[in-house]
Image (cartoon, rainbow, N blue to C red; front, side, top):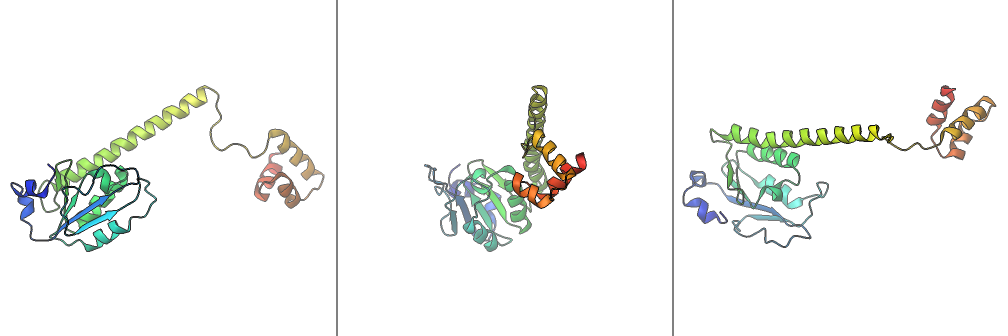
Length: 198
């Protein structure tokens, strides 16, 4: 369903008397019109990409404007959340205001006043939990495969074993920690740690 008119023909959620608010995000590479079908009187648009670190000032204005009787229309889930964790957090934040959400492309309504709200929210959160479980499983499988191939994991050593030996010997001879740290381009704490290895 692509328009609010389609929803209003049969959806009791649309009987709410509050404002119709819309939000969308349009990335620099997007070719679709993510404004299409959204109520236009209170439309907030961020023109930013999918990186979760990019600020979204229009979203913040949108969220701050929401009231308990409002309905927030969003073109699709990926326009609101740029990852599943962000989506879950935003839905929780919006619902805490008493605002209902309509994800138009998914034909999904989330109404904090409805009896099925908790079930819908648990379903959404379960997707995040599922995704995290798979990510952790893949990460652990990758670590195991790397170890089996003899690949050393973690940060690469800043200095070689031969250099560590040199540092220990020079510390024993009385060389200063600060001068060794500067010469080998490492921290003083690492020089101390190497000295304790001997």
